[in-house]
Length: 606
Image (cartoon, rainbow, N blue to C red; front, side, top):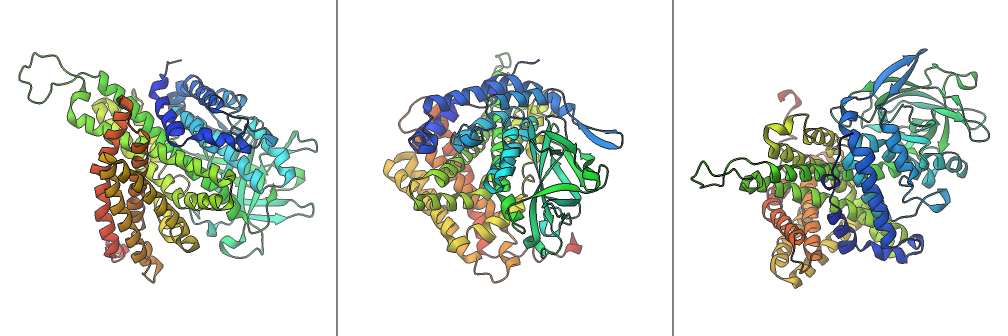
């Protein structure tokens, strides 16, 4: 088993800085929900996560990618066979209690702050995203059931998931519908005993079939006949692979069939499936149709599923940040140890070669990666802190404000790390030169894995339309106003601090004011198609402004420290403000002009 250095997975020093020096997570332990914890317990859990990620997950990351899941049929029933190291690795995380780290104590959770849970997961997402995806989906599934399931459903299914015995999925898309969930056709026919029988197909279902545990809990969107058109007719159902008997033991096989596997360019270790519900391959209770249990009320399925989807969107952003981060660390290590060439202007060809980190263009690529990766991780942890504020802040106004901020930031938290984390991985390959695109080095896999994240849980375009079309105007623009006020408060602190912080603050104030102006201007367009045609440009502009704010926050948090870590933070902040923030201006100018290039291009011209 190859040795994997923990220092090349994530930076413990950066996590400690972000969690303790910037976000002050120890203050959360003064609240009732987190009263059993302290900085010592938080740090101990993070240390445990780092150890398990390094020892149990990272060593088989490349093998899990190369030896991807395979499809087998036994007696006419399809099965997915996974790499043998996946199950034991997941079991170690479950046995350590890390699947239930942020869950309620009454269901077996540790009740750690959500922001700490994100930091814990980041270790595994960087070490082996293909294996960790099974755990991520299971935890999100359990969280949805706790929020929307009946007490009986929670008792029967949540503890086994948190113990690692059951696993979870989310079944939304269908072959003909894609992201247009209003067009799903899976139907749920009521039965006299209160159950439903499910009939239909679901596509792109990660973790849809395997033998990792005793059961798989599918959360399935479907329509009850007569339930109404479009998304208003969508309900949510719990459909286990195996039904439970009266005492909760795993029993009869349900009518859920693995039809085939999808083979993606990345996340190859995460089985991705086409599932048939109710094709009669098996007949539970002597009847065709997968037995499903309604979660929540009829017609509320999409709203309930968004509980899992929003959590998954932030998790996708976290995974993108983690992959960018580990790629950065590995390319930095390579640049420090790879001798090649001599400094510009050196005249003596017999002089020893220098490490490539000495070359200015290599440092440029490393600095860009650092700005993208560390900025993205900080954004995701900030969103985790907002989750904790939303749930546990002392007064209703603070909880509502955190909710509005989180709603507004979620599309950015999903898409910005997915876009710019991928760019960081591109630069990591470039730093490695010709070695970068060989399978002997990790960075080519990190790129392939991260390329899925701009599509996972809602594409870049969907997030853009959500941000511009809904989030910045919801509740009369209350979330957007809260974001602007938050950024403005940071700018005021920066101006008071003086120096580099003040210079960066002035640039951020100007960009933020321009964003507010252009947002209002875009929403004067009467037609949705006109408003949203350039939504992706808006998302990228707003995302860069948010990340500039995140970097200004970090710049202020290092205060007067004078060491390599603090100076590195200052250099990355300076890079972002001088190289990245200025690109916002042309994007906002294009939006303000109401550019119709895309709208005026006929499909037949393409």
